[in-house]
Image 1 (tube, rainbow, N blue to C red):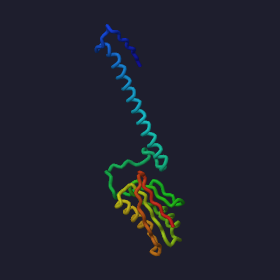
Image 2 (tube, helix red, strand yellow):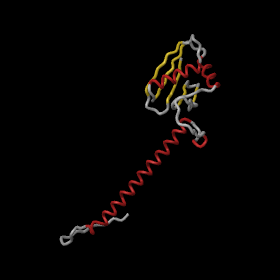
Image 3 (tube, rainbow, N blue to C red):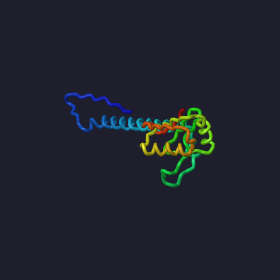
Image 4 (tube, rainbow, N blue to C red):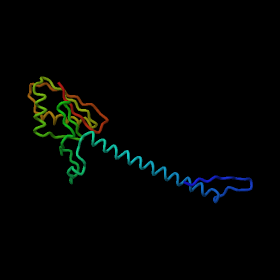
Length: 165
């Protein structure tokens, strides 16, 4: 970068020609600062995407099938993670469970007399309620089990359904 030193004597006048090198240097500095800021923003975005993928253990986009249709709220997707030991399901919008998942969840619940189901969601109350009702319908619990539900608003992009005794 070019830095100029200006010596002004009483007989010199400050005109456009004298200030031109300073304006050029300031313009170049500003452009470099903007480029550095953009590179930091891009780097942060890429690292956040990578860390989010590592958090939920989902396959890379190239391995995921490409959806050719528009978003459909009734298109139920596999959850990001199902952990029967922690008794939780992580999902984005809505979810469906495989037969094996349903059996493992029922196995952990079947001996209980009461069940608390909680959803921490960034979605509206209606959407969270639909996901909770879908979970209860998929699990198909015996009528003897008393079910208590709770929906808590969350700021996270990942929704969490948990169940406990």
